[in-house]
Length: 114
Image 1 (cartoon, rainbow, N blue to C red):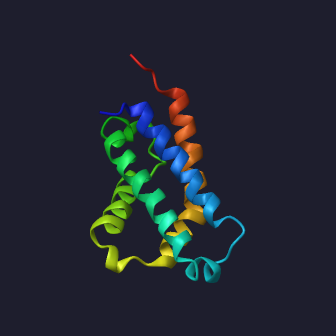
Image 2 (cartoon, rainbow, N blue to C red):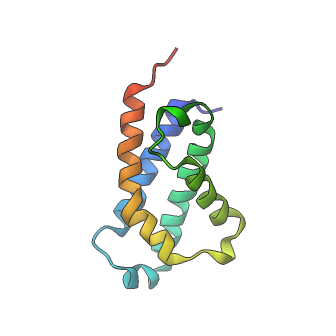
């Protein structure tokens, strides 16, 4: 099993990757690029999976992180794939992913490893 540190690091790295995939492009370009859509969606699935496990012990230490929403996004991407709204995926990657990465950076700096 991966450690909490490894999971948070994964989430941070994949959040940054999702943000990079939509950097300097608009929604129309994203919507026309299924490869980019799949890449961003995969990144968000990894973020959700990593955060779901990490949140069990850390949610109180980082209340600014929307742990339940991250888990919910992951669940939609994985279990309700036919309902994926590409605009929501784009907006999450563009507007929220870098904030999450920065929050995870802060959290990683504060965690005491036994």
